[in-house]
Length: 346
Image 1 (tube, rainbow, N blue to C red):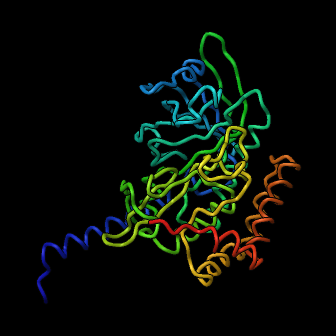
Image 2: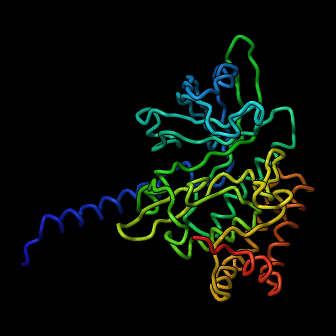
Image 3: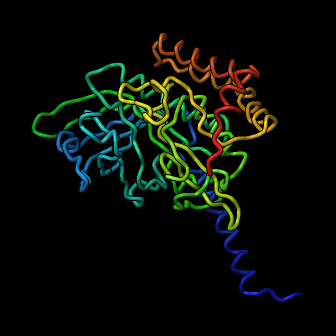
């Protein structure tokens, strides 16, 4: 029998570890269902919402969730997160990070969760902001439909209870996003922080899908070299990393009031689609477009089946997406929007 070298053994054990880690993350219970999760969060809400500076603290609280008629109470720490949405001028109710003690949640729906991003409704006094949140949630679900190399999300029906001097209660929808480390482990890899990487040095077919998807939803607020609203996942040494998008509130499909395109792009608003991907052959574009055609019914079904969407909002979203499909099915529009507008700069 040939003697195994130390390097061979190390690589073998590493592969086993990565495979085992990925399998364990597939079993993370929080994102194994699309059922809306009813949650109550209790904390001194006013103190939390005031704590928006660069040096923010965690605030003690309690999270109660209901599953199959059974309530479970968990200790949780909360901290305001985000960049643009953290500003008071943007969001009166900004996004929140939930931090759990792993030992205290091991037998719960939040098992294996450490820090979880909660996307909130941004404005409590403007009903339309609830619709923006629902649309961003559906954008994540759209990309889930196209590729597993995407962040999972879970919708929550949240009751916020302020336990401070002036008790108050607020009821809104929100959604949580899969942790980056969990995503990486599920894909059998690890997060990679490498700025200035050219998009074509990432997984080729995946970046093609990503670029067309961003065009589909009318989003220009991303950058692979700048790692802006993009996470990189390395699955194997020497293999191109996977680029994964997130944060879609500046897209034309979501159409948040604060979203404005960069002036250098020359488009009047975020509803105007502009392809920001690099040039491909007609055959490569066609191969990518077919992925979107194959998933059209499922994607449109996401909007038709979400009951909380206002009918007018639903119709607007479906019309906007139908315009995308009209574009990729028309050779002249493909030439005008993709072949003539694709990027060649290196």
